[in-house]
Length: 228
Image 1: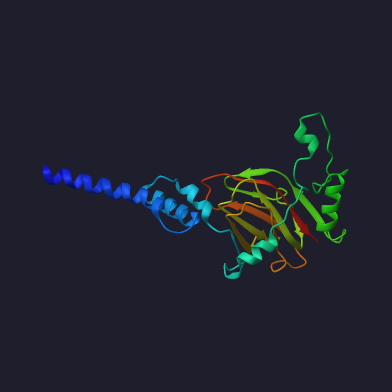
Image 2 (image 1 turned 180 degrees about the horizontal axis):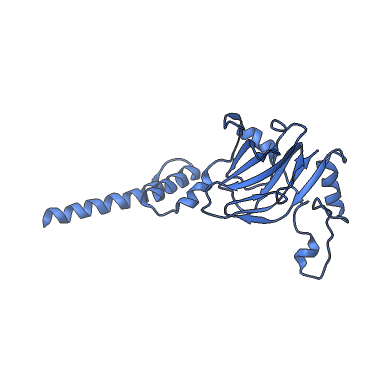
């Protein structure tokens, strides 16, 4: 019985030491925090989902044969981050007061505020390209932008997640129903403008959004397809 007693005490001291250790660690506050998080992970205190928040954002592109075309560096990703209001709810809709908003077939407000007019001009290159705006959507499996709408020579796609994305797959599908390119977007919390020029010719394509994990809903504030 004595041996068993000492064995239990030894294990208890080891676990307590593991938790207390970071408090006495040398270095700055960031080092201490990292050690605390590492120890908590070992003990199973932090849910795995919370730990995923530490993962870096990444964006990779594949061709129709699933061969890598490009993997964006951290600096390149920063260049793709943007901020848009064009697909967000207007002040009128947020206020809860009675209101009417009229959109054209591409989801653009017919009487937009000045800030939206400026974004439309910028995104369309002063009317040189067409825009398709899609608003809030959430899905556990997949959706097709514009319910399968065909876009002539899509040039770029803007998407903005409501919360941090786990992994969003973007498929470009030609008129024959073949996937001609796939983009994988992970761990993003901001609006990002994804170039599509490397995939598309003067042809029409539909754009499919796929939830890779299908464990949690992907929730998007909205987005824009720039095409033609």
